Image (cartoon, rainbow, N blue to C red; front, side, top):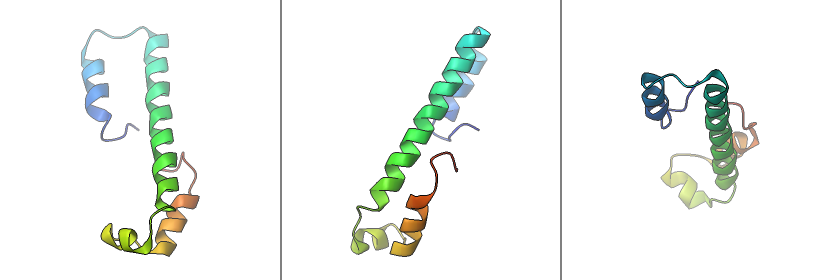
Length: 75
Protein backbone atom coordinates (compact mmCIF):
# COMPACT_ATOMS: atom_id res chain seq x y z
CA UNK A 1 0.00 0.00 0.00
CA UNK A 2 1.40 3.40 -0.96
CA UNK A 3 2.11 6.01 1.69
CA UNK A 4 -0.27 8.99 1.46
CA UNK A 5 2.58 11.34 0.46
CA UNK A 6 3.57 9.03 -2.40
CA UNK A 7 0.03 8.24 -3.58
CA UNK A 8 -0.25 11.21 -6.00
CA UNK A 9 3.03 10.28 -7.66
CA UNK A 10 2.02 6.64 -8.04
CA UNK A 11 -1.42 7.66 -9.39
CA UNK A 12 0.21 10.04 -11.86
CA UNK A 13 2.61 7.40 -13.07
CA UNK A 14 -0.17 4.81 -13.34
CA UNK A 15 -2.22 7.23 -15.48
CA UNK A 16 0.64 7.72 -17.95
CA UNK A 17 1.73 5.26 -20.59
CA UNK A 18 2.17 1.98 -18.72
CA UNK A 19 5.71 1.24 -17.66
CA UNK A 20 7.33 -1.99 -18.72
CA UNK A 21 6.68 -4.64 -16.04
CA UNK A 22 10.23 -4.64 -14.70
CA UNK A 23 10.30 -0.83 -14.49
CA UNK A 24 6.94 -0.79 -12.67
CA UNK A 25 8.23 -3.37 -10.20
CA UNK A 26 11.46 -1.43 -9.69
CA UNK A 27 9.49 1.78 -9.06
CA UNK A 28 7.27 0.11 -6.48
CA UNK A 29 10.31 -1.42 -4.73
CA UNK A 30 11.92 2.03 -4.62
CA UNK A 31 8.77 3.61 -3.13
CA UNK A 32 8.44 0.91 -0.48
CA UNK A 33 12.14 1.19 0.37
CA UNK A 34 11.77 4.94 0.79
CA UNK A 35 8.74 4.45 3.04
CA UNK A 36 10.57 1.94 5.20
CA UNK A 37 13.61 4.20 5.47
CA UNK A 38 11.43 7.15 6.48
CA UNK A 39 9.62 5.07 9.12
CA UNK A 40 12.88 3.82 10.60
CA UNK A 41 14.40 7.30 10.71
CA UNK A 42 11.36 8.98 12.26
CA UNK A 43 10.80 6.22 14.80
CA UNK A 44 14.40 6.42 15.93
CA UNK A 45 14.10 10.22 16.12
CA UNK A 46 11.34 9.79 18.70
CA UNK A 47 13.90 8.41 21.14
CA UNK A 48 15.91 11.65 20.87
CA UNK A 49 13.00 13.93 21.84
CA UNK A 50 12.82 15.17 25.42
CA UNK A 51 9.59 14.92 27.43
CA UNK A 52 8.59 18.51 26.64
CA UNK A 53 8.84 17.92 22.89
CA UNK A 54 6.99 14.63 23.18
CA UNK A 55 4.16 16.42 25.02
CA UNK A 56 4.11 19.00 22.22
CA UNK A 57 3.31 16.24 19.71
CA UNK A 58 0.88 14.54 22.08
CA UNK A 59 2.97 11.52 23.08
CA UNK A 60 4.10 10.12 26.38
CA UNK A 61 7.60 8.68 26.69
CA UNK A 62 6.24 5.10 26.96
CA UNK A 63 4.22 5.49 23.73
CA UNK A 64 7.23 6.98 21.93
CA UNK A 65 9.43 4.08 23.02
CA UNK A 66 6.79 1.56 21.96
CA UNK A 67 6.61 3.21 18.55
CA UNK A 68 10.42 3.32 18.26
CA UNK A 69 10.60 -0.44 18.91
CA UNK A 70 8.27 -1.27 16.02
CA UNK A 71 9.86 -2.79 12.95
CA UNK A 72 10.20 -0.57 9.88
CA UNK A 73 7.84 -2.71 7.80
CA UNK A 74 5.03 -2.32 10.33
CA UNK A 75 2.75 0.47 9.13
